[in-house]
Image 1 (cartoon, rainbow, N blue to C red):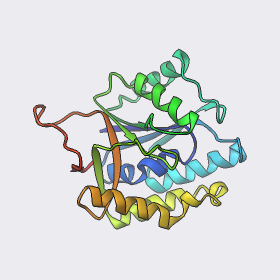
Image 2: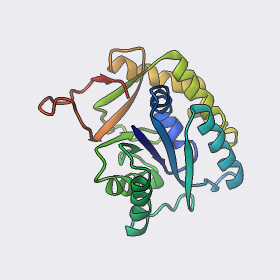
Image 3: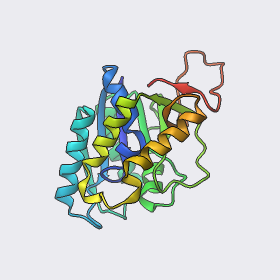
Image 4: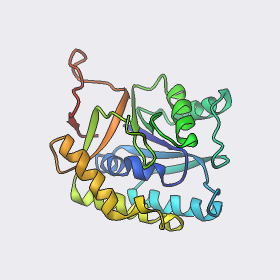
Length: 215
């Protein structure tokens, strides 16, 4: 599979889908990051880009591309939708991981709207959560994570050293969320997603809340 993960800022993808993307790489899938900004509101852009590239290397990501929008001012318009769509088309994406609209950060919400519109012709689209996700986030799809993969995700997030003072980047916070989602999915650790669109082996079978999947 050709996998693309879209994040508003450096570190968003790793926080929301880092474990699942590591599993995709273990399964031999191609994984690419598309980051809409380089950060810069609170930290140096060049440092944040370096950190993002280091994190991508830790997860074994094939490519990371930045669109260069201004931090806190990600747009939702025809131009960004076309740029995202062109990127997805160029890499022949099969599955896309995107922000959820259920988020209090304006960049995340606009990234979600733009990404969902741009991926309307993609077979599989899953929306991930973030530390600023609203309580209305209601996952229907879970990827089970091994302890090794969870540690790989935490290592990738730790590569964002400029953000290390943020409490939600602490390892225990990330493990706690993974345990919580794992309990919902009847496994030890998991990442959870809202289903925007998914291809199923049995089209007549519903995707049940609490279903645990492998990427």
